[in-house]
Length: 151
Image (tube, one colour):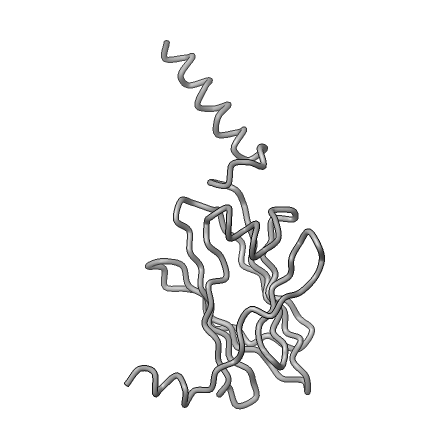
């Protein structure tokens, strides 16, 4: 009985990585690209749950930053982006939610297992993987607006 249970569990965990209909325990990526005008750098900091988060990154124009992770139940990764050179324009957004609806509706599917975000002058866009199109999701905020919302 014990051998059968071990074989079943082994096959189950292997199949999780192979079957597209199961989201949990899949490898996934978030990519953020800098398409700002005027050679502006993009400052990035992302966090997941109680995690300390990534170190602050400064992304040059036309470059892509990637974070790789495994999806667990209730996975949430949010990011803060600031537009250079003076970094007064900011946006905070959920870059990934471990829900099928988020992956399908926001990222446009699981192929190629990436949720691709692009910073542009007017805001943050997400790429629909299936269609290859970009949709404006978040507009830049200014630091003054953010400070007044915390008072």
